[in-house]
Image (tube, helix red, strand yellow):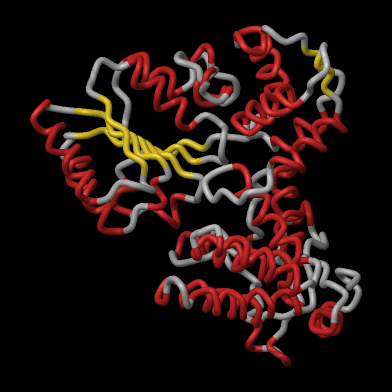
Amino acid sequence: MEPLAERLRPTTLDELVGQEHLTGKGSILRKAIGQGKIPSMILWGPPGVGKTTIANIIAHTLQVPFYTLSAISAGVKEVREVIEIARRQGHAVLFIDEIHRFNKSQQDALLGAVEKGIITLIGATTENPSFEVNSALLSRSQVYVLKPLDEKELLQLLQQAMEKDEWLGSKKIELKETTALLNIAGGDARKLLNLFELVVDNIQEYPAVITDKKVMDIAQQRIAIYDKGGEQHYDIISAFIKSIRGSDPNGAVYWLARMIEGGEDVKFIARRMVILASEDIGNANPNAQLLATSCFQAVNMIGHPEARIILSQCATYLASSPKSNAAYMAINNAQSLVSQTGDLPVPLHIRNAPTKLMKQLNYGKDYAYSHDFENNFAAQEYLPDEISGTKLYDPGKNAREDELRRYLKGLWKDKYNY
């Protein structure tokens, strides 16, 4: 018997749960599918949110040849074979799952066919396409971002499963508690449905009463294998990142080993450490970002198996480094302020004045050039008048940022209350 998630896979947009911004009434993707004129596209989002389902719905809806390849198993040979078939047929749609796993030569093999309209490409990826898809291919594709399903949508899926699936319909199921199911699913529809099926199958009593305790007991017993393409992928990387953030190099290197033994992409691991180096360490140790960036570059050059050594050095260094999320919080604070206050005008004195007219309008007037003053500093306002004096960056409480705090206070005195 197929897994529950496959048995319930939608075949029309009306059956799809979630992604209303892309597939709801009047949405751009629904219009394109309805008109039968879809562009080449990259569907970017976490696992289990509908990327493959949307591709399948397009296949059912459009009256054109439709081919599917998996980037895990297909190579340039398979890509060229599909392109040749499409050339003979005049046109075809090609869906490539996990397109981020294609290397440059494999992606380059697609480019000419996409440019000439021989194929319409639909790529699915869990990774940021800006990093993993060639810029030339990306520029010829629309990128659609899919979101994790929210609690209401996940509950809707559970209800549909109990109503539509024949096997579940033969059981008397009482959903007494759903918190554990939803927490483990983490917005992943496939994970939710397959876990739900596993739980129901392992409850011997009748009726099958679903409680949080039963879900956790069964999940901990049965979901323990690392799957780089599925359920454990994000759980293990989460444990890895949290170990580094928590300053535990033992935990970090253990979860690193789990990923390496599971065949995880070394670039994926290294990229996460680059992000962490700024988000969780930042100015507490600026060298952390340098090492993480060097690590990412090095594993690209070295590859398996020696990349594991480079990853281990970086992971243990980051875990052992002092921590600060001050830079991360600063940009969050600034973006929140921008969303609240809108496009405030740039103060005249710090505007650019490349023309005579701009100078006549007082652009750049009274600007104090910092290097003309003692200590290369001139006290002047750099924020719009409406938010003058707002503090967005609050240095963390660590040796390096204590120095920054003292330096800023020496410059600005009490202006920002550092």
